[in-house]
Image (cartoon, rainbow, N blue to C red; front, side, top):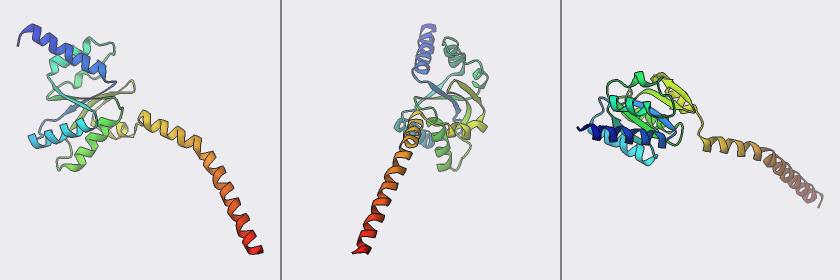
Length: 172
């Protein structure tokens, strides 16, 4: 590969990382073609970009970015794939779901992640990443919390109305 082609490829990787706020570094080694295709389909459905990258290209790509990814650079070893997402916990949920569907429950293996301006190193953080709430989930929680008192008032008024009707029907 020519030096200019390598440079363009490194730039493309960097641009894609910039486009997505959440980055997961995973190991897919050992997945057969059928499982890899199934994983790619799941990623596509959930708007997760899955890239298989060369470690040296990835290292150079993250060096040129504003965010300091030096904490996760040591995890760029062996076979490396990136899961890029606009939802903070979507890749973690996908990994967990994929493992539950397949007999090889250790793959894909989470090497590291950059989520909510925090670095997570190692597969042991997968459950923690799954538990992080997305923006939509947080908005739903706030709306639910705001609506709860209103529901209680409406419920109380409805119960009072029912009691009044019952008392009227008993009195007749």
